[in-house]
Image (tube, rainbow, N blue to C red):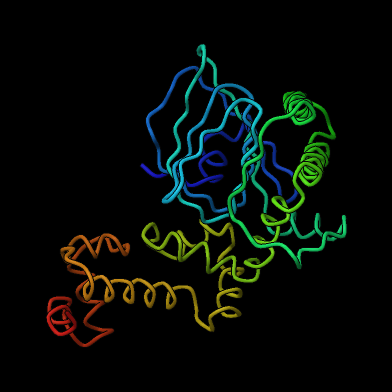
Length: 284
């Protein structure tokens, strides 16, 4: 099973979510280890590990986080996640934020990103100040106070500022990765999750846009309406897989998001004037 975050928390556990402008935070706890689960981020994320350990497995990297560590990753990252509970306790604070929050932070503190290389995944080891900041964040997260949302935003900024002081270049490389992709955020999220999209409603859910907002942004970015863009992308990916892999036609139709192979065949022939089988035979 693949978990789409933060949507899973927003839909399944709304009582545990702190929702401020452009920021979502959740305190997640478990008393036992778990098997590896697949995770996809549709917002930028910061993991504050309070107790236990967590293993994150990317295509080319395997990262083990320990108590007190902080891990940041940009939207669109697809990874395997495994909780390692120690003495029956695992706890993490998960913070999700969008481009607007980051752009405001960059502008507010006049951060120059011209000299840094971009990096979509960064890891910071624990130190005393960082542990104190995490403890403070957690305490406010559990309090029922009127100003909690604003405090959570300020506490998130406070952690960012500490990470800047701990390793300026590393944190700026993360900010630059967000800055450089912000204009194409919608397209980036949709292309990274094309296999999960069955409809325009799915596109809205993944991008957290209304239909009218999505329609406007897709016109601006691609000069296409959402449905047209979706059909074009799915069929283009299918054509590539037919020409370059040994995957079955049924498998390919599922990979690109079609519910049935027959409907995939109808749509493919409409686009390429050939059945998938004919296209494969001519383009091997």
